[in-house]
Amino acid sequence: MIAIPEPQARKSLVEIMRRMHASGLNRGTSGNASLRVEGGMIVTPTGVPPEDLAPEAMVFVDESGAPATGGAKPSSEFRMHHHILARRPDAGAIVHCHSRYATILACCGRPIKPIHYMVLVARAPGVAVAPYATFGTAELAESVVATMGTGSACLMANHGQVTIGATWQQALAIAEEVEEQAAITYGALMLGGGNRLSAAQLGASAAQFRSYGQREKE
Ligand SMILES: [Zn+2]
Image 1 (cartoon, rainbow, N blue to C red):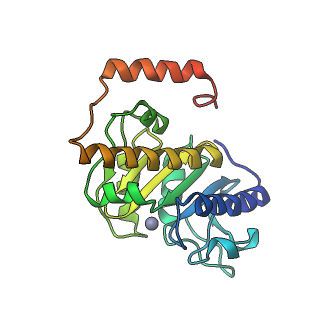
Image 2: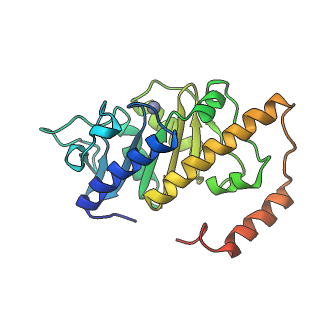
């Protein structure tokens, strides 16, 4: 299990939110992120714009899912973050955002199908849509974990996307790729849906990724 020191997690969360804002993955205060630390996780606070975020504003949530009191309130999605980290020991970081194309597909119940080999970055031959549940609820947390399976990403119906990684750099890179794949899927749907890669073609790409080095190494 990958846990990083708490001060490092707090600083990294500021960096993640700034990068999500700079890349356009996130707008305003809608996205959130968490990192596993010893004894629990650190999650971004609710309703703080990226330019005002500081390491001290990040919120510790213990292993039972209880947020620390006395400081800022945690993100409304802290239950989802806690639930994913509890169920996925391979995850050290979680990124959630309402990036435009991922959210368009999620609002239409359209998964990302394997029409481009880079979808494999999500460690599955596609990105499924988790059934709708109200934001911030345990039901949404369950829906996301069940839909993600052993992969690293899922879309959330009428909501957005969520990704995991061993490190925050991985989780963020996957979120960026999911958004790119969502944009490609959106465009392909306009032209009739795109040509699906076969299982053999996907298998060959997955093997190529493994020998490629960086992406599959952890
Ligand atoms: Zn959200």
